[in-house]
Length: 116
Image (tube, rainbow, N blue to C red; front, side):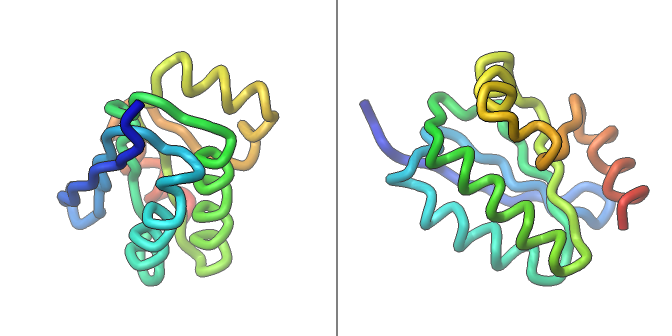
């Protein structure tokens, strides 16, 4: 199993969108957190999770950590396009109330606009 995570950054109406692909695991979580910490230092962020292949508890924990980090700075992270397997894992560890989700980038943009 490959343990890598790819990133690309783009913009929607002035809001950063981080497209991630690959495996979000304990092995890739430190690099993921570094990227997201840098992006959420001053702004909110949409994370497009539609191309995540595999997630472990360590990866979900990294998402929780970066979400709290952003909130502490008055920003938000919205996870967009998460598949059913990902959402089942979130529900299993009862992290749903700690993370914010949207089904589309436009919905995520509107949530960021409401929360900040």
